[in-house]
Image (tube, one colour):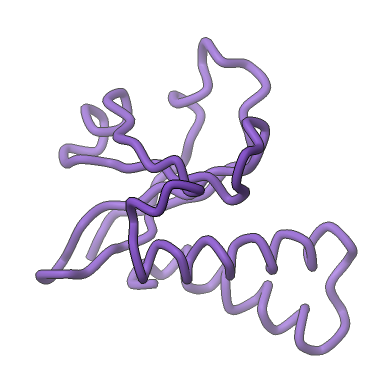
Length: 116
């Protein structure tokens, strides 16, 4: 995944899921994240991901930040945030978030990892 925080998060979630130690919610998240990551890797514009640029995060991060849904046809689905790079045809996941409850301050509360 390219970013230490996101990589560590994913590896811990994967380890819990594969060892049977994941909670029901962690297992559900593991499956949704895995599916979304596979879709983004194959086609970041896959219609079910509803990928779009988030200008508030682009401005804050200093490069275009894209958001993709973890579930198809579910507006309350969690979100993955990513950027293109560092190399050609690379995508770097820089954050994820459950669907925000407060839409007015939603993107100001998103924690993003720095691309390396």
